[in-house]
Amino acid sequence: MVLPSLNPIRSERILASELPIVDLMGERCEARKVIVKACEEFGFFKVINHGVNHETIAKMEEAGFSFFAKPMNQKKQASPAYGCKNIGFNGDMGEVEYLLLNANNTSIAQISKNISSNFSSTVSAYTEAVRDVACEILELMAEGLGVPDTSVFSRLIRDTDSDSVLRLNYYPPIDCNNKDKSSSPSYNYTKIGFGEHSDPQILTILRSNDVGGLQISIQDGVWIPVNPDPSAFCVNVGDVLEVMTNGRFVSVRHRAMTNSIKCRMSMAYFGAPPLNATIVAPSVMVTPERPSLFRPFTWADYKKATYSLRLGDSRIQLFTNCKEIN
Image 1 (cartoon, rainbow, N blue to C red):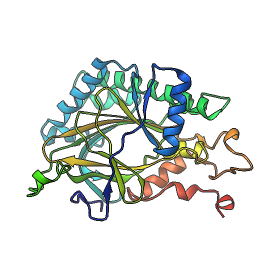
Image 2 (cartoon, helix red, strand yellow; image 1 turned 60 degrees about the vertical axis):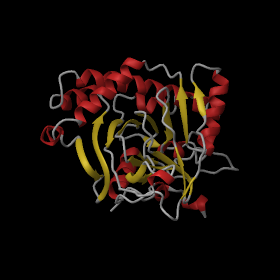
Image 3 (cartoon, rainbow, N blue to C red; image 1 turned 120 degrees about the vertical axis):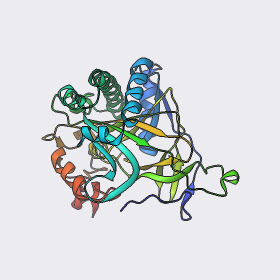
């Protein structure tokens, strides 16, 4: 199982570094250049001036905190959308409660009947707003990569059959009674709340309250803490986008740490294609110098593989084009 463990872990190293920042109201050519470079080097970046109004974000955050503050018996009424500590289907565990919602209005309305009267409208408004941000970013990516059809990525999550989801993760404070608190600058991050993994979908748009905890790993054993920024969304490349860029963009492993003092809540929109969509890189991404690294597959195939494996297992390697790898 992915069990909570003390941090820092002896074999690991914490590296201070800042993620690239993309201003969506700045020059378009500059935005796409920064995005492409960030996706190649970090797989993560932050976006500011994203156009999602503060009220939409604040209402969603308030609705999330209100839900997680309910008594356990009331939260369980939202099952199977609600879960506590279990992650996935194969025994992985974390210090987390969550609410997992299909990002379509019909599904949201159905589950909202067991939560509150205005939950549906709040979640729908937020989901539609962040989906628009995701589509804008994906189109900037396509432009930056020189793909003639600039909607090649975005139309997969605009599709009415898109398998996109919204996940709210709530991490309560976990105090390890660390006697060395005063001497350690990172003592507030005590346990692994959600173990290391990559996101299987196309793109993730993440918002959290003003409490740190997200860490990314661009090399084994080295973790970069991502500082929270209330004015920004954190964006990361998913496995499907790595495949569709023929390995040029990287889907980076990351994890969430709990805080010993404050609770943390993250709201993650995972943009995904329809189940029957074939995942393949546009022809412009495949050249004699850079042959196709992955064989074609459907999102249903990849999702099935994801659910069959442990949280930290690599899935993308199962779909490599062995002829080219060898």
